[in-house]
Length: 82
Image 1 (tube, one colour):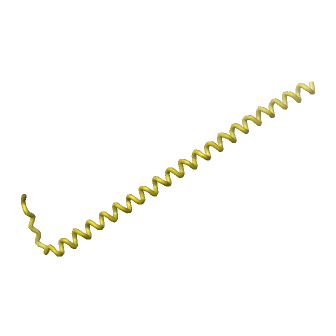
Image 2: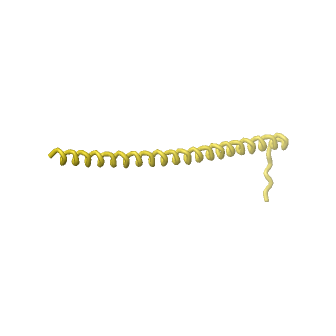
Image 3: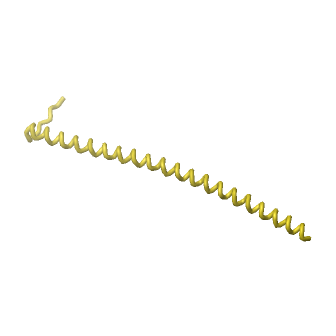
């Protein structure tokens, strides 16, 4: 194995490498936290959309039923008047 020779003193290299390592670790941790936060937000939005979709479909069914009742009442009134 070939030994790499650095021109800088080891104490300075250690400080530089430690600072570099700490930097990428912090960056990775921030990215991980952001990813988790966004994943949680996506789940919340999907849950909310599903709830609103169910509510809208229920309202559409209710409206359709009311229209059918209204039509049947019109037909009954027209038959009674005739």
